[in-house]
Figure (cartoon, rainbow, N blue to C red):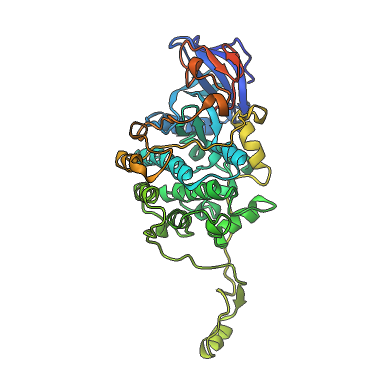
Length: 432
């Protein structure tokens, strides 16, 4: 059901405007008159709201996500069934997706990338503590707010959505899925670690490690092809960050970080001493050489012959099947921002780093002593505040009149235009 400006839900949420549309939902900016604040409302499309099984699963997962409370997670305020309308009321974040930020800058410096990754990892860790695995970690689901805080959106949504429920083009992005997701296997917390590793790779290189003409070819690459070390694409990537990325993106889950807290510890170490080769990991097996399919008799002959390199050997009759591949093909990256309600025509003209924080205070004190420029703000460490960022110059925001999140009674000025009821705003991301 398409909602119109001026309509009310539950006699408290006034619809102001539609700000996004995705494969399974439409997203609206609304005002909660009971609490006098702006919110984002994600409404299930009719084709899914008529599926009782899907609605039940969607509601259960959304309610689980609503129990998460963390500075680096987009808050879910309410999950509502109102007749045939099923919707989620969420925190409205006015900012830019990490995907769009990478696209605009080309690639990020290592310090900035680590700062962003730390904030994302802290949000993921909080969810894992509650036994919630995201399963769709990607830069399109990471939002950089106007004060420099990074928030992860859509916890619980990916679990509710399956390829049996809707088409593959509407679920996640194949560019970031783990090998176990590509083969339809069991996903756990290490799945999110892999996808975060791919996101870090994209931050420092400006590109994803695997691309292709279609979904299946990209998924197969996640399964079979080794990842090119990021320093080959960007020589400025320090050894510590490269080792972290390569460990996150190991094909076998047991070779990755055991949990996100181990990853956070290594990211903090890399921030202080980027040139220290301290990351412990097992080497990934190179599967890029041609595969030879032989019989058992031929294998016996090869074993008795002098050794030489022939590449990986697969016995006759053995094969791996690819099934239940989530994600989309080549057009997904362009479509992702539109699904989040992000309008490229309103992109900020920014070429500067955000200088994010989000790591331990002790490390901030190290930076205050001269280890780094731009990161050394102790009071910014735990809340993600970006005290050095100039919104007037880079994003067109009026700092003196902006309310940050479009909160209660705000008189927001975005790019010189006052944002009020139904007003347009720059780079609004409703997290679909």
